[in-house]
View 1 (tube, rainbow, N blue to C red):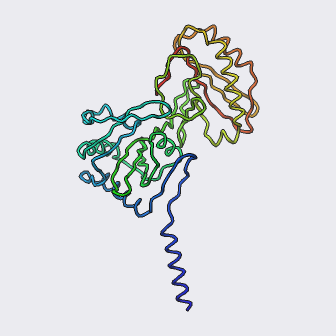
View 2: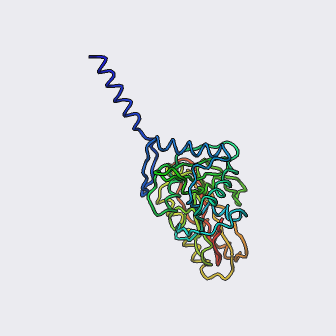
View 3: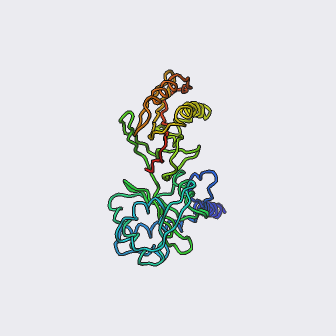
Length: 322
């Protein structure tokens, strides 16, 4: 009797274990559907075999979409210029171009270019929150596994299979900007995640040329999300931006000259530092007054550690697209 009970318990434990899926953190608003581990493992095996065997393209079918970030790099490759069908993506209210293969020959051409770039060490893993948010911004359907990130030293490829056929149907690259060369302090900032850019209060992944106008172009955070949340409130950040915006608009709204202004705030527990940089043909007299008024304002201090961010303003100028 005891033996039967033990065997039954082992069977139940093994059954439950087999049904456990590798869970990930899903961002708010993103619809993500898990697949069975067996299906994910089959897809992962197909991917690995194709990367290690130059003649193995079993993961490919006739249809393959290249997302906007990868196509931005691939569109000038000579062998891919003959692929006829383009796709327009709407990301952050911007239209950007991708590409669609409708036959196996073109799908192989695209995949070969990826394989050329994956020549060294790589990792196949599930997507993190930032990668899911980017992918979600490019598509008009629910996310379905098998979905992987093929991570190399320089690239983070988004690999999505059709579950029923186990064929690759979506290929893109996460715009992983983890290095920033700061023109103000000449430092190079690196992060394990990605350096985030915000526009109109929302994180943006792609920026177009926009309109030639005078306004706050973007906010660039040089401090991690965790450090920001620990040391400053949303109200604090909003206060800094609103005060600086008010001064900028009062001085530059009627300026006829063109250029960019970068204001770097370094907020600390006891001391705040502000630095400025300009580009192109700005009115330097207005700039002097701008610096004077910004420095005169009182800004909040952090709870403990220093946080750093930049406000980028454009004066009769277009957006930077890189």
